[in-house]
Image: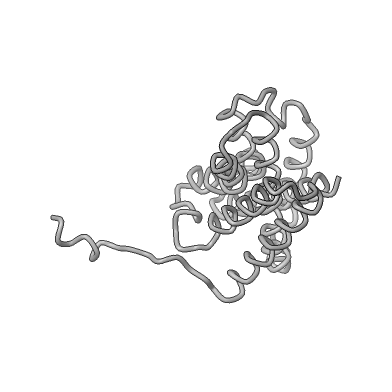
Length: 208
């Protein structure tokens, strides 16, 4: 129940962040709703297709589409005031990232006896692919492929969750522990601007 509530909050926040991207790209209302929905539900959709989990989550629960479309429309209407909530969006996005990751790991574990490392990868796909698809549709280099510590947070969260489950820790304790660690990790990365090493053209000059 806790993760489900967080999931609803997360898809709403992700839909709003996707809608903001659509507004910046001067899209019409349909485009804004599409980008918002892809951002919120894209990661889970990619995961379900890869593992053959049907019906897709938003097909089985069409109310998820209603949440995301409504969030995108509200964002379009109140776009001029959204900058006041930038910090709140970052916090909810961090919560969404770790919640999506744990839910993705849970579904992958329940669906089949995947190797634990594969389960963690499916958790990461659930957490980051919505934003990746958003950026691709908006014709920019995905944030997750740049220096931002984002996918790393997802991997750590998923690894901790799967590890605790492997040790037979209570499911609620494992979920809350992974959620807390991943959430704090992401907030610290934002606060202190933690970045992964970045490489550029100068690093491969000798290979021409």
